[in-house]
Length: 391
Image (cartoon, rainbow, N blue to C red; front, side, top):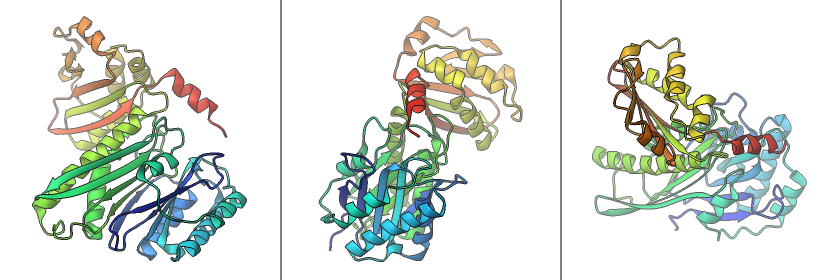
């Protein structure tokens, strides 16, 4: 009995010449946890997947790219059920044991005639690779995103393989993104849910490219049932070590998404420190990250700290003492006591602004809470990509 996820990639006619679907066959002993978008217009596959995971233990994951099947009404629901039925008949499982995922253009019906024809004529051998799957789920991505990592816990090698897609429309919860994380461990559903929730909070739900939340976002985590002699359910120390390692993988995936943000040239980390509470820190993070003035300044390598301070001062329902605020850019203090800092080495600062990674630290001097997110700059290419995106 295989404890490995098996993969089939194929073309179903959404894209003309390249694969636009991946099917994952899950091991019999696997456990699955999924987090879905909170958008009030969930796509048809999100609706069906949320329903199916409550009815049956998932045996297959099915992902198509190029068409989001979102805002497609009852026909979109029917189309999803129809192609799941075809596949479930071919691979001999119940349609409720298949979880569908889609990504691509919103508002268009799936080309069902082509999909039915392609699926009916496809022999599912499950001989594809994770790399092939990472490419099949791409839409506006400039590059495929995959991480393969071995970790050591209590002298046992644990393999983690994770793929995701995402570039623009990046905003919790959870960005126009799909992510699939495979871990070779045995863990029960409640602890896997807990693990995924924590990892998503510090990675996929801590990034922003343009402030938009997609209709299709989903993150699935699969524990294959391997390494059954490691007790992650009852041994707290083992679980904490696992959580730390898996969170790192998810954070690295999230960084790839930001780096691939449509037209992005910089990855920017925003840290709000010494806040009154976490929610205050988080709100400030996103106000800054989603400021077009700030993002365009970052694109131009312009150390214009005034845009950050002005945006901070515009958040009406958060109280702080302006005289106590300290602002650092790339670890250089640029603002304190209400004016430009005397410690600011402007020549050095300007030189660091050409870096591909920028760090912004806002110190409030209000408490001990903090929040960090990752965002990108806003370039001329972003405007071109999103104005030229087909509708």
